[in-house]
Image (tube, helix red, strand yellow):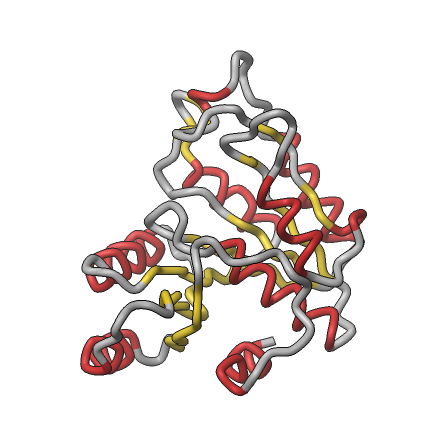
Amino acid sequence: MNSFCIISAEKYAGKTHVASIIAYLSTSKSINAAYYKPFIMNVKNGDMADIDYIKRTTNLNASDIYTSFACRGHISPMHSSKSLIDIRDITDTVEELKEKYDLMIFESLGLYDPIRADYLFRDLILDINKITSLQAIITVEYDTNIITNTLSLIEQLHTINIKISMVVINQNKNLFVDDAVIDYLKEALNPIKVVLLPFENNAGNEKITYLDDRYNEFVSFL
C-alpha cells in the first residue's frame, strides 16, 4: 500500500483540501484509496467537519473514510480526552487499511502535538512508518511565514527519516504571490516538487468534478 502523509506546521493550512484533491484523482484513476484522519479536532454537536468535507467533495464511499477519535478540544488529542488514548486503535486501523487498499491518504496533526504525555504525533508517524512507508506531502499556506514554516518542517521530517515527496503551497486567491519566493523554494528544495494551488479557507463543499492543468503535478505524482 502506498501511503501519503499530509502534514503541515500550521493549522488551517489546507491539509483536508489537498487530501480531497488526491482522493478525487485517485478514484478518477481507479486507485483503491482510503482517507484516514485518526483525530478529528474541535468537534461540536457531533459535527466532524473534515470528514464531512471529504464526503461531500470526493467520490470516496463513506466506508472508505476513516477516523478513530473525535475530540472536542482544538489544541491536542491529549488535552481533549479524559481517558488515555490507546495507540493500538490507530495502528490496528492502518494494518487493516494495508490489507484492503492500494493507497492511504493519511491526514496528520502537527509533529509535536501530544497524544499522551509521553507520546507525540511524531511518535505515531514513526510507528505507522514501520507498518507502511509514508511519503510526506507538506502543506503550507502562502503567507509571511512560508519560507520558515516550509524549511523547518522539512528539517524535522528529515531528522526522523520520513521521505518528502511534495510541497503544496495553498494560495488564497486574494493574495499577491511573489514569483521570486516560489522560485527560491523550488531551487532550495530541489528535487522535492513544489506545487502552487488555489485555495480558500472558507471554500464551498461542492463535489470536485474537474481539475485544470494546475493539478497536472498531482496526476503525474499518483
